[in-house]
Image 1 (tube, rainbow, N blue to C red):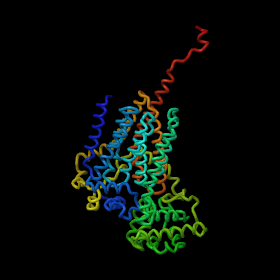
Image 2: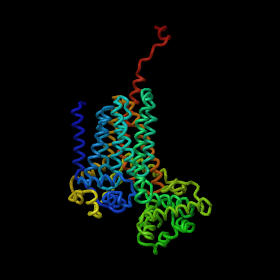
Image 3: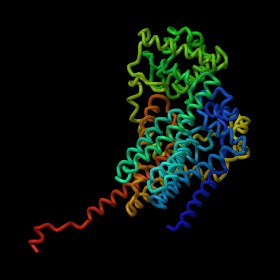
Image 4: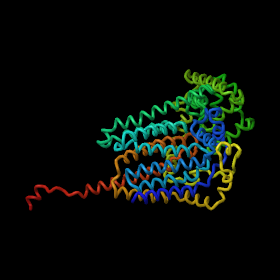
Length: 534
């Protein structure tokens, strides 16, 4: 394929994506979405919610609003731009057709179509991971100039830090990805000679930039609210709930490791928690409306009027704010004291302790959720490989608090309600519903290309690194879906990158079969017996 034809096809795919999804807009919703929009409108640092969510998405949305750029359009430009960047890296190191296949998967996966009308962190996180993969390809290529690799390494570190400061818990996956890239780069003799340089280029900027940005975030939160944390999730409440989860009670069930009995036991040994625990211990009839709402929402999958781990965070926050007001320093002081008191009671044996000291939000009672883990792992695998349109994203039709979302995201208001009434919307839903055919065709094309053209070993390293990244997420989020809450968006945002892995894996498999066929067809040297017979 000539470069001209390649760039025309690349441009056509980008135009097709914009034509399909450019007329969509973010729809307002409650809970996490509303909180994130409030953070964006406040410029992040001026809102106490900064202790609940890391800064990247609220700050990006805030500065888009300052510059009068619709956040939804910035997200679209980020997806297309990062996709082109990754496709170009694969083209020059493997095959033009394979890079186009990867680009198509990135743009037309159900997640990329359905979820971009929600103001969540995962769509932006998805864009960051695409850019991270493109930078990794450049850093791994010893044929590139040191200057280009150095720039790519700095960008790799910046995107790594950005990912960690986009959603809590991503540190684990970045560490796995970097370690896997370095490990699999040792396979080739040429790469082993360049390995120390690769290690320095990947690890040093990533570590330095991540520590600097996370440290600055923690210092700012400490100065503003008295909580030196960069991870969000209300660290003082998270620490308290870790201790609550460690209290052994006889009525915990799957998705509810901390029950009313757990809170009652904590209030018995902690005079600080007893000051504000009352509403959480109230009966279903006597509980305040907000506590009733938490219980009712959780009951859809807990099957009891208890609160699941994703909502106990908000339950404890509600209890403390209702008692002491929204003064963050008072809340930090009270929860820190309650945490210390419960921890001391567990250490002394005054409270019975679970055998496995897992951190919040995981359930340390393995018997609650371990039997359901195989089913949830199967569900995760399905959502990564071929998610349904419904799993890929919620179709929210009712716009909640339009004034807030208009101000926070510079929305194109004329599209908010109209976007679901057009022929284009029907086409979007059809593309999302038939993704299995697209991924099947792209996988077959990639296998055929690997069978015809040898896959560069640098692509092998990237493929195995991506396999490690998605494999770690498969295991950890399988456990989360089994023990914390069955929330699909925690998993499904990686489905486009799982599609990239499928394509690259098929290409590598085709190339491996090609090598075996060539080896099997090689002429055999004649032995002494054959010469004598002649």
